[in-house]
Image (cartoon, rainbow, N blue to C red; front, side, top):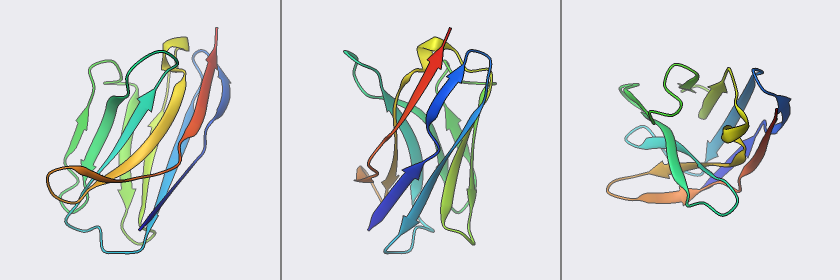
Length: 116
């Protein structure tokens, strides 16, 4: 199983970025896919997640109304559209797959830096 995250970069506050997570190696139809982030000196936190089959989503309070998680079944890819970015959104972002009761698989991370 492989999760390949991409799309990070440097953006000014108020700008937008779209992260992608390409999943391969098995069927993800029964899984929950998520985006996490970890800023320097802080613990990793959940940002958003989506149930692959139903499309039901979850968002952390800090990103509600600004971030949107979605998936493309045909491409086996999960996206995180990030709008109105703030300096506090600066972190390494990771995608992950939960096949049952735990986050079993993780991507390599992509850096998002928001300048003020």
